[in-house]
Length: 229
Ligand code: DC
Image (cartoon, rainbow, N blue to C red; front, side, top):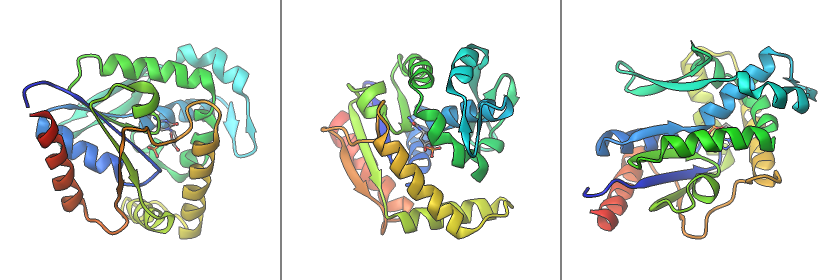
């Protein structure tokens, strides 16, 4: 492609946003930024410091400690994508646990948390040539992104994909807990006051309940190329 663009991929949890984003980044030699990993890392920090738990959230204490959190991505050649580091420690595995998934929507509803992360995301994308996935990329982080995709799929399909991922990596989880978590995060992410998950007016909706990765990828590449070469 002649000019580097910003590809914003938003949508509900476990819609395969990161799988598509990684493939696109590889094909076009773009940087991939998983913004969900950043919210998850802040949640891990909050949990470690006892600012959040199943039945409580100490937002004030978390807000006044936000400057102690330093986030960075480090590319892992073997895995082919960048892993999340929090204060110099690789937290990639821990941030994907169901435990963190159950707390992350509460933490990401805090405006000060969002402000901090949105600024970092805008800096990462300022040279363009980036594929960023999350909930508010096309609406808040990069409202001027050249290509905006909005991924959806039925809650049941998404929970099944997530369940398989966690079982495959050896986590001991119950399907009904995963389904509940997917539905609960949809609800909190879509109804929060600051930057709720909504589709940008100029986004293209992709329902992939019945679509495999390869088909989605081909369709999206055609879209990228027809518009931007
Ligand atoms: O993409 P994910 O499922 O790993 O994201 C985890 C949570 O982080 C999600 O439930 C809501 C929050 N999130 C957000 O509020 N804004 C983003 N841009 C990305 C994620």
